[in-house]
Image 1: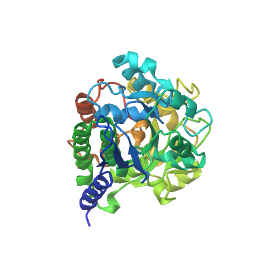
Image 2: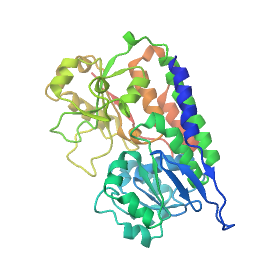
Image 3: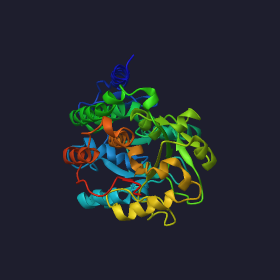
Image 4: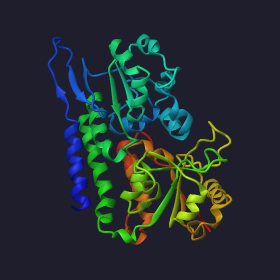
Length: 384
């Protein structure tokens, strides 16, 4: 079976899995509905939620892409990860919706002790949106049970752990929750079309022509540590869809895999990749590339050169041949990962994608779906 056939099949399956069942309610003004979330939980809501708590602030990437108008209209608060770890994007939202970003409540991390269910109830929240990656912790801490007892529904979505499988059903769920089904469908069409620009080509690339790739997750986040990578999920899967062999996938069927410099040297990858973002405001000590809406070519080239010059890395064949690149970390937690897949495909197989321009894709994405424009730098290649 070809990759194209398998890709079409899984899209049909996940779309079916996200079917939303509407039930009648005694109150004529309310329309109860039941949905199956990404964790496979059947959740019934008495009406469309209007006071939503986000378990992660970076869920705003997805909400903004399908919301017709103000994406904060139905959001009362969040965890402040968007402010801390992608301040460039937060400032774009802040400039577009200053009053709304000012009123948002920081409810803290839903999987730690600083998350207050009392604050959720006091602020009359009618839905808590959580990430699938936090399902185990939410169950272990009793968070789901306690919110359920308090009458606050919990719905899981996923744009990170198994992003390429769960993005479409997660968008369908968000569309139903926000009353934006038509806009969600429009973005899904865009998403599938942009994914196919890569997968339809990669399907014809023989296995022996697919380069070995090591992806360093958040290179420079901890300047003294090497290294974390991705298994067959998230950026690991992005590499595979872009026509590469992901080194982490050869080690473990896991989301995150710890690797050593010695292991990287022994593997002798054809291509070295890393992720970076503007973490310097939250962690001044980082040596990562500062990719994002305020990214600078000069700054990021200097930082990538420094990462390449770390002891041991400078001897890698990929570094010597100039096949070391860094890409925006936050693609890993948004429905915009098709841009990352496009850029990785261009790096891995430039001759196979002579007309693919990920920067042009970003421009169209922002123009059609986002409340702010495209600027900055979202990837950088080592310049020898």
